[in-house]
Image 1 (cartoon, rainbow, N blue to C red):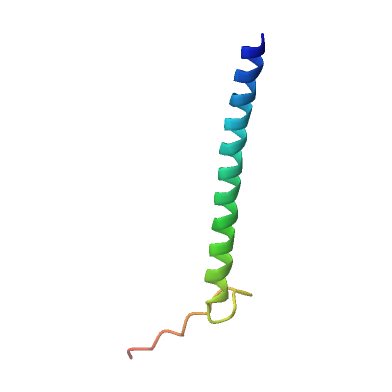
Image 2: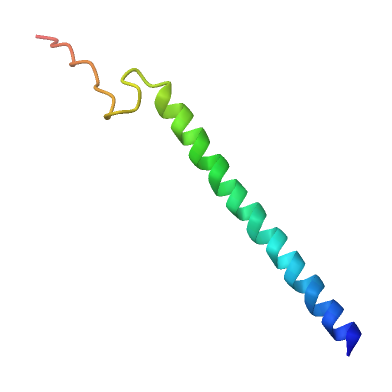
Length: 57
């Protein structure tokens, strides 16, 4: 009985650690994306504008 409770607790603890790690990964991805947008010419507030193509005529 007690061993079953300990096992269940260990399983729950491991699943919690996995969920926390995945949540942290998602957070890190969002931070990296925000930093990349901040480094864009327009500060990430709107899509970057491409320079007009030069005419070859």
